[in-house]
Length: 301
Image (cartoon, rainbow, N blue to C red; front, side, top):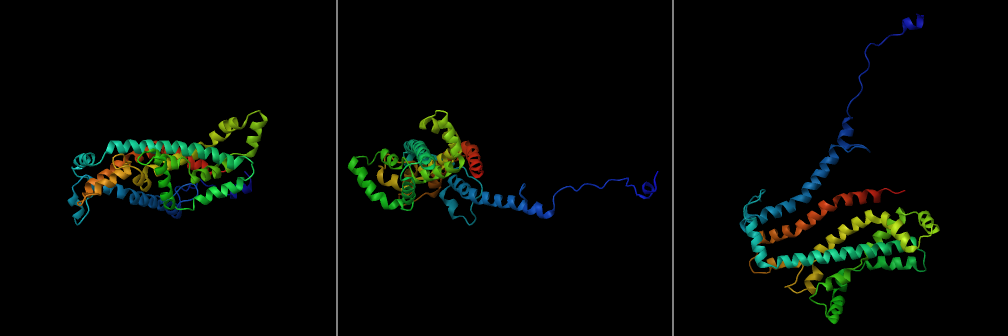
């Protein structure tokens, strides 16, 4: 054994590896893993967003006297089905529900279809006036919807469509926001080289759109579908003006629950909860596609 080996100390025990994360990383998190503060803020935002709906469900399951209590109730009562029956007796609920589903579905399909086609044209096709037309489309978003209600109502009355659900559907078959949203998404997600390659392989414009643009646009289409359905479902002013009280949408029918001298707010909130349930079901069903679309839209390249 050499002198160097004799003088070198030998460690019989290895240094224990550090486990866990530092306190600052556990609280604030890092780029790969969120911390306690992030989870706490998310929990606070969730509770703040869910409490109004929960409070509406609680009051909707009780009598109107629950609103006069010093401390608001936190647990449901036993009058929910009684209030549901009162909603059915006061408004044409099933007619309004069918009208809302039909209107929202047709508007969603139309907006997504036309917005995807127009967005692809503005994003990837080269034609004269492309930029000017896009500016005109975006400029229409700056005009308040309320300014066009009176002229639009006069047009619907001239055509004899007042009182029909077509008067709600036709003016919103395509939206400027949908065109702008799809255009901005397709500009970044589809390389020009991919379109040129499809054309060199003999694909015409329709086949290029169907096989190249449409698969790439599906995440954005899912997001646009969800938001368009939600906006059509909750629209109130225009259906209230153009539809008859006997043929309303669900949102305008709910306004009839508080049209009397005495307003039973427990019944009103029961109707609001019933109108919210279809949207909650839609969010649960389409939530996976929504998250996937947001993640794919956030990653470029």
